[in-house]
Amino acid sequence: MTLHENITRPFSENEVSEKNTVPAQIEFRGVTKMYGAVAAVKNLSLAVRRGEFLTILGPSGSGKTTVLMLLAGFVAPTKGDILIAGKSVASVPSYRRDQGIVFQSYALFPHLTVRRNLEFPLEMRGMKASDRAVQVDRMLERVHLKEFGGRVPSQLSGGQQQRVALSRALIADPPLLLLDEPLGALDRNLREQMQGEIKSLHREFGKTTICVTHDQEEALTLSDRIVVMRAGEIEQTDTPEALYDRPATQFVANFMGEANALENCGFKVESDAAPPLGTVAMLRPERICVAARGAQRRADADQRQFVTGVVEDMIYAGPLRKYQVRAGDSVLIVREHVAAGQQIFRPGDEVRLDWLRSDVRFVTA
Image 1 (spheres, rainbow, N blue to C red):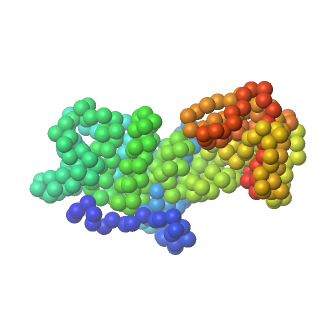
Image 2 (image 1 turned 30 degrees about the vertical axis):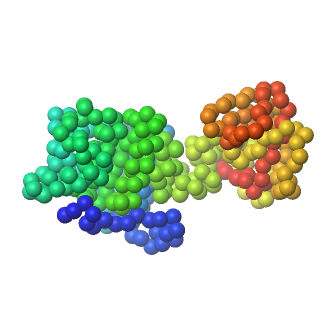
Image 3 (image 1 turned 120 degrees about the vertical axis):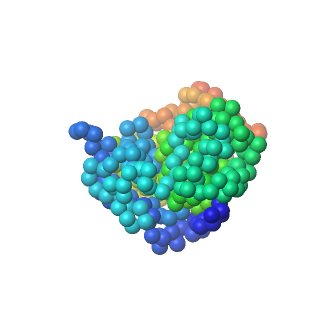
């Protein structure tokens, strides 16, 4: 079998409506995992579609890693069932599940060369040595490590080791790819490079991929859908765009990025929609515009809310400038992209803030 046989093309953005007709490849049905009296996962029900890249996101202790360990077969559910391709695997041991796994620590065999690391899963499946060599050559060329096959892991950089780990997980053509904090050990630049590599590999191989991370940017960059977990339960599941722009709860709003809660803020919040009962108004920092107090208003001023305030702090962060502005009884966070000729405000400056009323969101507390 070649690397490009039986490859399922992943979904593109304009195929969202078609995804709903694709049968689930993975199903969690009412899964609970207890450790003594503590429920690490509570009554989890989740379906993952074939070819989908789904990220499980949450803070420490949210249960996200336990979900991955349940799917991998490293732990068994206390209650409920897990199905892969319609068949229960709740009692199937890990070594009998056809899946590739990439760990944060890479888990490469330190005494084996890169070539031997990649050959190992093929050898375990009984592939002939000549066929293994062909597969390994193709994979090394695909991940730009053709000249590193004779090295051992300790002679590679972190990014190179991660590419070897991804290659070893993919080379035997498993239907599922499981990623456990795959980029956590890399510095920022390498993480961004590897995000691009993972996206490229997912487009090429089309594997149903489950990724666990606590990094919101990583989840937003890589995923078709994101599951946000909290205290062992799913808080919200949606596309990256919907989770960020239309969070359902205050927890999701704050976990997916900075959010201004417009509650008891000392001014009346205007919105194009009536606030549902039991909700709090929320506004993303980048939706707020900052200007001098007496600056000319925008052409769409009739669609905006205006408040005045005083700058308490300004933080320069390269491409972004972040202000903390006291307006009414609240301190609002404002984030703007740095541009040439832009007016810069300092602590103590009086400013005017404005935002589109349609950008106000309502979330449950």
